[in-house]
Image (cartoon, rainbow, N blue to C red; front, top):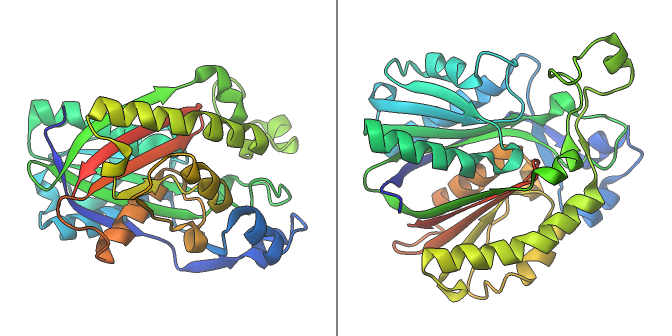
Length: 323
């Protein structure tokens, strides 16, 4: 049972708006095709001088302001990302410095698009030992790893960061659970850049530095697993589907989410989407969407909110929040 809550939220997206026609040109698809397949209308891409840590720090500042605390009150910073500034050091170390959070331990979590929920599980243990406040940030800059000719991926992704400040009180995080299906790890990957395949000239010439995804198999994974895992999670959390008022999923693909949501029996819940204007922002998508809904006044005190992440690994993570 968790003993912390969300004290504040924040988000940041870059200024550059990228249309479907612009992103689809190299992949030979147009605006109508992208909307029909994904429900995405535009996304934001980082400026050349911006890295993941810059987006993460901006979202972190917004969350700290929302929570009414300062960076020197943080005990820990966790950045969930699969597009770090560099392979090492952790992107969270740069964020700690940018924020001036001198007393905070800082580390990264890579569970790809489920990263924000996985990061919550790590924070739970740190707060139990150290107390104080935690800053959990999901941040990704996918525009740097996309193959401009691959219509399966290049039209989906945007850049951004979302953040939560956690501590005693606030909107209670009542239950968290995470899953990994490692036998399916090849469905989503960036083949080169690690110890298995260094990013050498041969790898670059073959385009192995780009993000790849078996879209059909990923969709099958989500449709086959998410409804059942959700039912299991809610049972373990001691609630029934009709108790859920809000559903904040990873913003993978709007058409797919409509199909899956219809199978989840969350008949009294509103599904919140930010992908129409931000695209799939990876680990940032859940906290960006949560922050957008919160700032719009969508949540009422006592509402139960289900967060659901899924993606590379393959992985899935769930969190139940009482607003």
